[in-house]
Image (cartoon, rainbow, N blue to C red; front, side, top):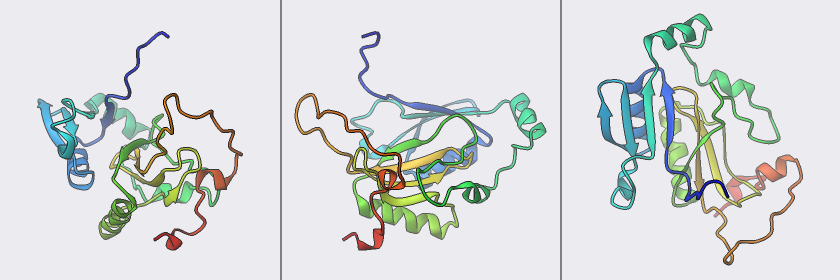
Length: 191
């Protein structure tokens, strides 16, 4: 063992407009700012677990003026998050469109109702939903995918498979099929 890993601590991302990003993560994702450094860095955590959590779960940093100029030169400064929906494959794995190498950032929610409530809230905002609600085969968790203001895909996840005993179970070999990524055929049937 090289690292005595105790689990994921936080995620740090660079963003185009830090105030817009803070608004998204506080208003939509129910997080709170725990500290700021000037106007260019913010630390966020989930208030509901703040007494159990450490200082932050996310760090968001404003792109520098030079980095924003590069994005503008590449035609990547302005994003229409609905445009990404057209790139989603009809069936198969949720290969989400991203604006960088981060595939998604996952947040745990209590249950399926929290996911359907989020769907309603996002639809009221005319905010795109990329995938879900659904249920993954590996992990058996319920999911919903949608982007943040910079196009980073967000996954909401609930009811992840819990270990059945100390040491867990042997790994399964899942087929590369759409049913592996979403074992539900129709979420309307869920009670």
